[in-house]
Amino acid sequence: MIRIALCWLLAAFYALAGYAHIADPEPFLAIMPDWVPAPGAVVLWTGIAELLGAAALVQPWSVNLRKAGAIGLALYAVCVFPANINHFAMDMARDSGGLGLAYHVPRMIAQPVLVWLALWVGGVTDWPWRRRSA
Image (tube, rainbow, N blue to C red; front, top):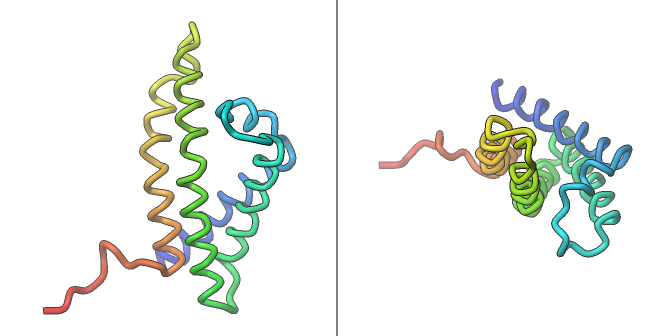
């Protein structure tokens, strides 16, 4: 029951984020590292990836599609981590301190949790609750 609820919650989170990437790309472009090529296209395609991953997580027809969506969202969370680090560094370098450590530290900690959560709710892993055989 908890896995299903968290699956829907994670899918809603990614669906909203995907919509935001497409509807208003400016905040995402502002935190993009300079070395990323075609930043506008990257933001658009990350939004599409989030929407597709969210849909794959909650569709009821295919376990394999659910697992593929979960793996895709986990890989996505790993791939956008450089943008989060860049945002942290840029924001903390501001005279005002930007959003501050109270925002950025939990966000940094949340990233690996999002990777695991996508894999867990998608049924890719049962860690750390799997039964051990004797």
